[in-house]
Image (cartoon, rainbow, N blue to C red):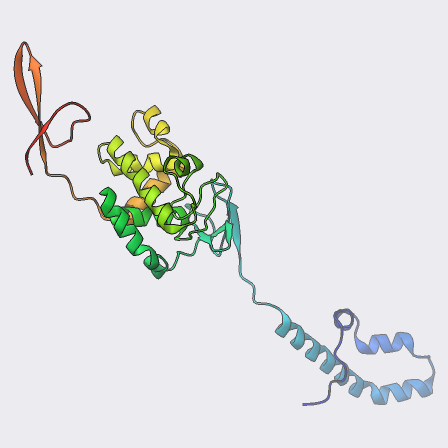
Length: 276
């Protein structure tokens, strides 16, 4: 390869592209026949040398240029910055980036990341009679299995415990996975009892608070965040096995005791389980 001399600066490269070398030479050299004759003899060689410099400079510039890709960003409902290589579209799921909890990405959390918490989840799910699949899905959506997750609203840890929940269950360290999951599952059990094991309402209350669920007639509140939250968890978990127990209650009508049967557990009063 022919020696190209020194590497041109960006300014020199753009100067070469705007002004041809022979024109620049004409502007600078004296107008006499002897010099003109000499430059005519040297012209082709100088032009080749200049073009070589230009080509080499552009080659180096091309090598140094980073590969580009379109990056999209927006703020989610909690105020977190979401970055993605895809446009927002229908609102793709977002996940916490470790050590940068205020920034989320649309790349799913690795499936094996939550394996280390399986024993803790199984133990406390069995203790509080909550489906392990449901608890695992809540942890996935709440924190992406990041025990140090912290939300702008003050929720902390794997199951994103709010300060009131932390105080209610006497949690000393919400970033301790055992304490966090123990309190989170216990609170989820309380919500399931409150809504007669209706997981959809319990999840809505876990996200928006039981007061919001009750104010809307014990239905999922019309909040986009809450509805997306419930939908995402329901998509991640198999449907619960329906309780096949039959409950018997007694109602007094016109002074007579009339038995009533239902496959739904009575919210209050006495009852008896007559079959499974």
